[in-house]
Amino acid sequence: MRKIELPHHHGEPQEIEMIQNQIDRIEHFQIVADIFKMLGDTTRIRIFWLLCHCEECVINISAMLEMSSPAVSHHLRPLKNSGLIVSRREGKEVYYRAADTLQARLLHEMIEQVMEIACPGA
Image (cartoon, rainbow, N blue to C red):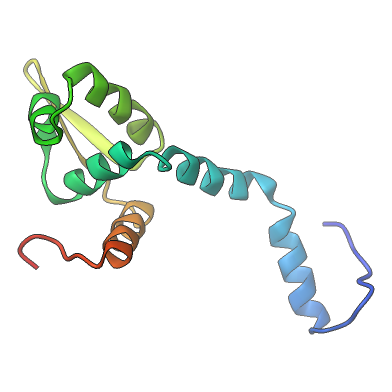
């Protein structure tokens, strides 16, 4: 951890040290930036929100969003790589759903708070 002497003193030195220690961890901030960059696409947010409420295959997601299956698959890949959604295979069919993680739950809640909507059945 680097020690910085601040030009102005507004807070407690322990708080400043803790803040500096966290702010130096650029890789943690990069993870958040990558998730938000990936979610800068309306279609990905719609797919993620849909998968928070049900488990679906690409064909059904395509029908609900009125998109081609290859286009939906293109959007599912980064969502899965980010850990926001998970998949399972049943025979030839692959089913997707939102991951059961704190990050996915927080993002789901944030989407619904911003859009002022509630989960179906809530």
